[in-house]
Image (cartoon, rainbow over all chains, first blue to last red; front, side, top):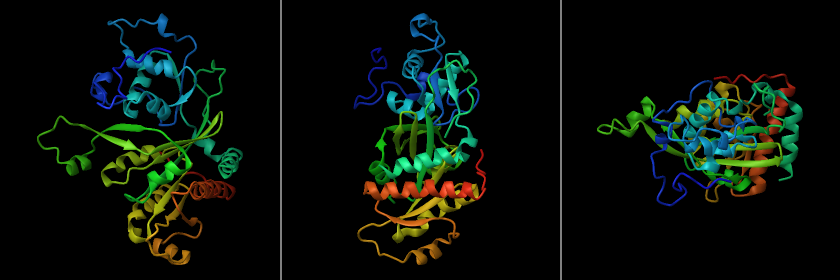
Length: 129
Length: 203
């Protein structure tokens, strides 16, 4: 586990930098849209230690926080909550990592909603809550 | 919902299946209460670009450089199994955040529209929205302690709901009651599939 490198944005004083500063002012992710519950996973070979993390790197510390956090597949909304970053910012960071071939993004498939077996499993599980 | 084939199939770890359910309704109708009662609430912020209509409402004259606004969202998760998770998203009630609805609604299993009999009209826009989208939804009347009770038939008429839309009473503070609302929604979605209804929601 790497130490937090963002100056502790959970601090009650709030984040040290404006949210979109970490995306260089960009407010739109590159490439295909990324759903709130799309599942992101780091590509196996992606390792922070092997990547150029120096000042010349196109990727910043937040990118690497995201990369670390999606070692195991995780939904975009969970990632945003875990990292305490606005979801719009997280999406841009994910899109950057995707461009660099460091993460896979699985979009929810609409056809899956037609899977009665899964829906029944959900209903049964909810009943037991 | 299940996920489509990954562009790279190298991952051995099966990606979790995520189901998205929206919780809609007017301001102060109990959306946050319901999400808290039935799920593990997670902090979620979204920093959204101001749309034209909201720019009008927010009167940003003199602060033209402010192009984004922070919105705290109701967000909760129910972990059903290691690889099956239900996500609840409260849709921001205020009109100026409606631009977020299409995105939230995309790929959602369905929606719960919460209603309050004292301000029934507040839920009309939500009902209209999900009807238009052809998305499965149920209407749950949150029974506030000091609100007058009406027969279900009367409320159904007042809401002008078609017969197929489930209408139920609930107490959003109660876990069991909120759970029953979610179960009703999922069962409704299953029933619609059984009748061969296709989801028509699209971007």
